[in-house]
Length: 91
Image (cartoon, rainbow, N blue to C red; front, side):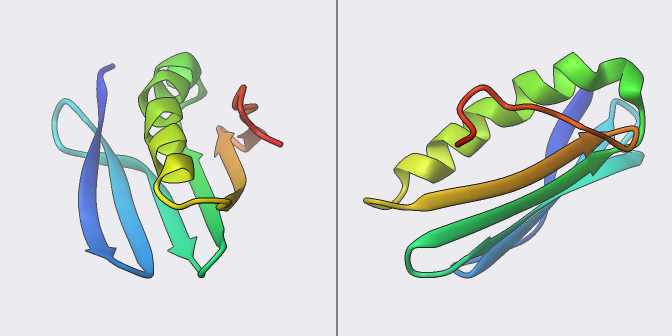
């Protein structure tokens, strides 16, 4: 199954992105909330079978968010199939 990011809401304080499959069916989400010095990221993908694809899809996105502001602290909890997904650059 191929998965993609599909923006739902994007504004300066928050973002909500649907994770969709090749048929445009929502199979997960990624939600981001920003403060002046912190970013909180929560996400879940229902199908554990595409765990590595999900990780490959969101890792560069999270790296870009972390670089968007100087000294931004990034906090995240990402899961697939109910199990926490470890991202390499997490603190």
